[in-house]
Length: 545
Image 1 (cartoon, rainbow, N blue to C red):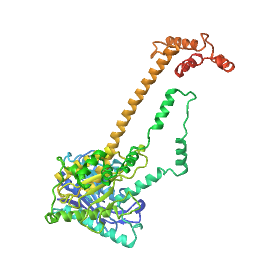
Image 2 (image 1 turned 135 degrees about the vertical axis):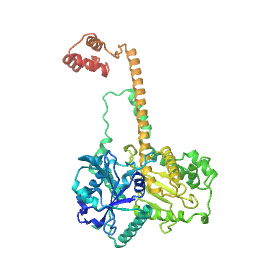
Image 3 (image 1 turned 90 degrees about the vertical axis):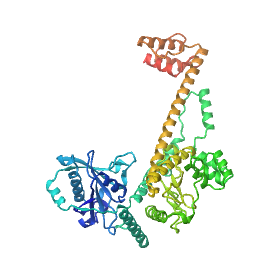
Image 4 (image 1 turned 30 degrees about the horizontal axis):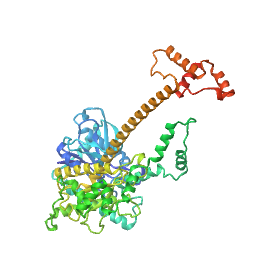
């Protein structure tokens, strides 16, 4: 049973201020209990706004627009103030603890930002991105609560799935009309959260610079300037020679050049998706197909999935794939061959073909990767690859993103495990859109793991270089007959005594002041011995200052 309330509308804010909503344009609905909340979470619409009492148990209250011809959804920051006020009052009043408080903190966020994992209890959720959450203080308003309770109604029989699919079909039809009329950029254009994320990522990339503007060009020029010490040692020369022989370009560029040298196209295909050269060559010797070895990631025994005749595929499976493709097309738009960061489909005209390549817009490569190609998720189900999808997991691969081949293979294995778990626990449910978010999160985790490993390697290298330098310094001091600097001093007097010894050795047994040393060095530099080392010189300056 779902409870409905009639709430106030009002003029929207910011860029949608030209829209004024009425009570008839808004649906406010509440789940009866935590079990029904599970259905609301699962079958919510992309434009829904979810309200809840922060840190307390309360009902899940949803804000939804039903007049799709007007606008399919309103951004969370553009909602009418009166609508938000009424939603918070309903939410607070349906909280066992919150309704007793004079004031409590509320949280609201888009339904698409709700994150549900399998280990959570019924009705429990978290967020994909806390920056998309909004918080507000709600004070008790008994008079307004009484008015809202009078509008309360209930619907016993609700087909959540059919309502969600009907809404998707309406959005698809509306987008088709808008494209035909070439009005997608008009003032009344429908707000699309997916397109908004894509535009935000492109704007962010443009703000970060493209290495061609004046500031970026100046920074690149500064990177080529090296400041050298006036003393050059043999160790320094050796280090510079070693650095000149080391390829410091990102690993994905080096691997890309290595793939170009592969004679077989199938080997290049597999290496680009995470296989090593030897693995790819062994697979290509045993099979002529590239998709077949990708399927092996889904089988513990290394054999391909069983073939299924097209006549044996259930009608509901085919229909589910057709609907999923329509939704993906509506979300990602059409193919743009000039832009490699957009979604592409193997066959745009055949609605039964679902193979596609989708961008992972939530993934941001680290600075050490430079400017790699975008991270893309490849989905294979056609040509008898996964004929029973979504009742079985699709074959997936990942390319780009600057990830090294070994990291790409690790990412693919984790995606496979997630897809296999989803198909087992939710057979028949579309997976692709949810997997896009999973790929972005997992790729970021893998990059973080790589960052920690590189930092650990750097620390070990620095420690080894320091040990080698200390050993070389000690050997040099033994040859020169100088005294090695103690690692610690027990007192200030001991430290000053050591400094006096160093000063005596540097001036042939005659300690002099700092000014006298400078004058003597200027008048007879050829007779003045200053080979005391950098650390010893600092002690001398400290002693005579």
